Amino acid sequence: MTDRKTELAENLAQVEERISAACAAAGRKRSEVTLIVVTKTYPASDVRILHELGVRDVAENRDQDAAPKAAACADLDLRWHFVGQLQTNKVRSVTSYADVVQSVDRLKLVTALSASAGKTGRELGCLVQVALDAESGARGERGGVAPDGIEELAAAVAAAPGLRLDGLMTVAPLAGPYAGRQRAAFDRLMDLSTLLRTTRPAANMVSAGMSADLEDAVAAGATHVRIGTAVLGVRPRLG
Image 1 (cartoon, rainbow, N blue to C red):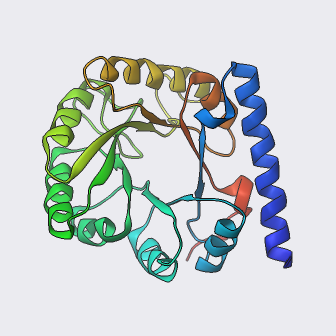
Image 2: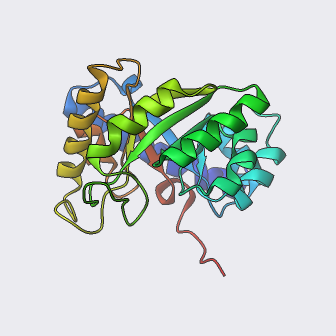
């Protein structure tokens, strides 16, 4: 093993232990939680190593980093998740490689994603990003729609050609009533997911939790956790 492969293997093993322990504590099966490794700022060579180590779900939050990386790893059986705030002028590029866009938070974006997916002939999974720090009708500091805007967006995604409504995503808020209360935030997301699934039972994906709070997310019922630093190490500063 190369030094980097050894490092990543050890980190993955530690994260796997944390997820398994969290599942056991919550009375859940380990198979109920999918690990998504967030590879932003790291090279395609790391993605290849992760694939060798069994990772199949990877995430990016900037198209200018993701597009060339996805192209360099196009021969691998990976599932690419786009998790960052997405501008409509980047939609065409993102839909060329992403399997799931987790950050759908406005109707204009739904329209753009649908049009682009139609041109590529691919079905694109979509999560409605929920901002638990947003007032009614507003977007959150880190993107996302206020809880009372979920149904409108979900209906738009479900009706849009080329798109598939997979569920909900959130980022633990830095402000508002849930700031510093990750478990409460993730419990709230699960309540919103339960409500959504009463009319859209297939939209059962719940993406929540990162390196620092994955246990809270698993305890709340998240189906996917997005882990970067705990696997890849402390990120180099950009710029």
